[in-house]
Image (cartoon, rainbow, N blue to C red; front, side, top):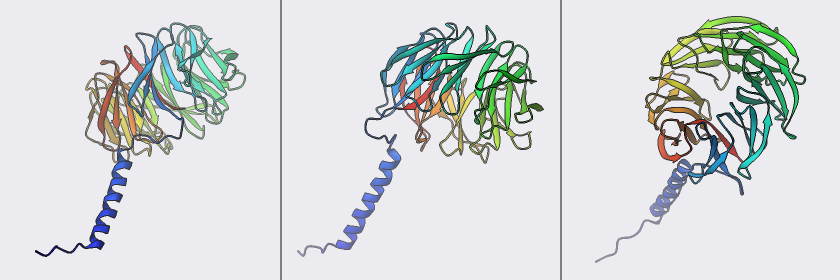
Length: 374
C-alpha cells in the first residue's frame, strides 16, 4: 500500500494558523501584564472589623488584612506613591498604608466625622474635611503632617481638589453650600449656595465647572468655577448616589437607586437628557478602560450591569454576590473588582467576556475598593 504524500505547504500553513490562534487566545486569557518585581493588588476596607484586606490580582488570592482603626472609609490609592490612604470616621484621623510593607505607616489626627480624602493634582498634598468640627485640613504627603487648617462651613462632607491645582472644593451639608478654598492656604475664596445637603462632587478636567449632587433631593447643581457662581440646579430622576464623568467629560452619569438607573447630563449645555433604567438599586459605576462601558453595581439584585455608554444599552447582567456596593477596574482594563458587602467577599470579573472568574473572601462589611500597582 502506497503512503500518502504529505503536503508540506499545507502543514506549514496550519502550524502558522495554530500559533497565531494560540497567541490570540493567550492574549485574551491574560489577566495582567507586570514588569519584574511589580505587584497588582486590590485593597478593600472592611467597616465592621476596622481592617483593609489586600488581594493579589495576579494569583487571585488574599494576601492578609491590615488593621487601620474603627469605621474605615474613603479608601484611595495615592497617584504616585506606593501608598493607600483613607480615614477613620469615628477615630478622627487619616491613615496611610505602605503597600510594600503591608502595614500602616501613619495616623494623622484631623477631627471627627471624616469620610474621604482627595489629593492635589501633583500628589504632594492630601485634603480631608471633618464634619464634626467644620474644618478642612491640608496634609503634606511626604512628611505626613497637617500644614494648614481652615473652617469651611457647617458639616463639610467631601473635598475635591480641582485639576488645575487652584481650589479645594468642599460641600457643606449643613448649610447647602459649596466652599471654594485656596489650595495652598485653605483661605475661603467664595462660598456658593447649591442644592440641599450637598454630597458628591464631580469636576471637569479643565476645572471650568463642578457638579454637586444633593444628598436629600433629586437635583444636581452646576457651578461655574471661573466666574464662581451657580449656573443651574438640574432635576434628575431620583436622589443621586454617585456621579461619574464620561471618558471625554462630555456627559455626566448620575446614578440613583431611587430612579432604578442613571440620568445623563450634557456637561456643555448643562441639560439633563436620557434616563436609562439599569436595575433594582444601582449604587456605583466605574468605566471600562476605553470608556465605552459603564459597569453599574446593583445592590439588591446581587449583580453588575454593563451599560454601553454611547447606545445607552444595558447588556446581560453579571451575577457577583450579595449586596455589591463598590467596584474598581485594573489599569489595563482586563479585570473588574466588585465589593460584596453582604457576602464579605470580592468578585473578580474578566471584562473581555463579562464573566465571573472567582470570589475572594475579605473582612466584615467591606465597603470601598482601590487598585494599586507597586
